[in-house]
Amino acid sequence: MDKVHPVDERLPLSRLLPLGLQHVLVMYAGAVAVPLIIGRALKLAPDQIAVLVNADLFACGIATLIQSVGIGPFGIRLPVMMGVTFASVAPMLTMANNPDLGLGSIYGSVIVAGIFGLIVAPFVSSMLRFFPPVVTGTIIAVIGISLMRIGVNWAAGAAAPNLPGYGDPVHLLVAAFVLVAILLITKFGKGFVVNIAVLLGIVLGFFVAWAIGKVSFAAVSGAPWFDIIYPFQLAIPKFDVFGSLTMCLVMLVVMVESTGMFLAVGEMTERKIEQRDLTRGLLTDGLGTLIGGIFNTFPYTSFSQNVGLVGVTGVRSRWVTAAGGAILLILGLIPKLGALVTAVPLFVLGGAGIVMFGMVAATGIRILAAVDYKTNRNNLFIVAIAIGFGMIPLVAPTFFANFPKPL
Image 1: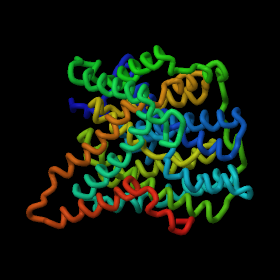
Image 2 (image 1 turned 135 degrees about the vertical axis):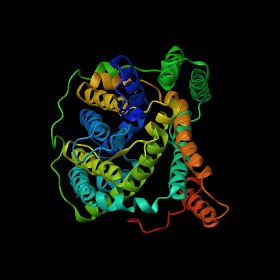
Image 3 (image 1 turned 90 degrees about the vertical axis):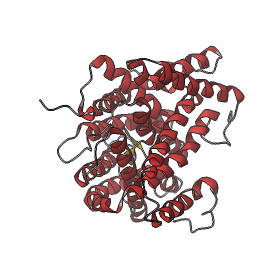
């Protein structure tokens, strides 16, 4: 009898549920951030913003299930969680602030981008031969290092430094407590406890935050028990040429980022990524985005914090993220449960985020450590130049401020 690869291992339900919930918790803040940003920019009513969030969770669940389980030519069949990409925020805000466009044009451009993604996925995946370890490692390392800013901001208690409560010492102390708790559980825990170290760290941090009065359940009491998500619930799609072209460019950026994430997951799970695997994964990016446009939400990509979580826990089964996808789908249909998850303060998630984003960077560094720099000095220049350019948005956020707005 052939030995089952850890990626395909089917775990008992008693382990699947907590492991799946762990994936949901670490991605939740990022998953709901984009619909909240766009909803507020459009000045939507609170009940409409709630629909945006619920639709996002619902579509996240569908896309994650397809990506993890696989359906025909779709799904990379690796432990991957799907969520709305932040790369789409800027063009969507531009459309949101244009009275002639609005939400209908956003959905139209997302649908076009999804179809575009389905068309170009095979061509993008054919470029896999241009991703030797020196390129793969550099991309993954740059992504991980760039994302550290998000983890640090979460730990400070807000998504950006200009928001209220940012840098409150209490937030930083609780985030540090969560980080240390995760490290101690990973170091001294036994068996399954080690696999859910991040979940346990978040739960402990949540109780500390609750004990000091930093947890609010107001959103839970006001949320309905059930909600039905149906196509074009908030707006009928309108197709703007410029908006659609811009979103197609975003889709290309998403696919490049997804390629790096898929290769990172392949490295962590010790499953080699072939061109056909990459094609299936990128096709699902396109399909997920198309589903998003139809079901009142936005473009989808693989979430990097969940890639980091795979490295932190060592759990490689794709059925774990499939369980996470099922939980997301349920949260989208039962808003009261979704509101309960939002009660977890951002600074609690920040302690875990620093570990997970750091794990993504560490994976890239591990790949780079195996690259031959002595006999091929070009590899050193590739790493140096790529990291130099990749760090521009992080070290000089206003570097492109005077470029034409469409760029």
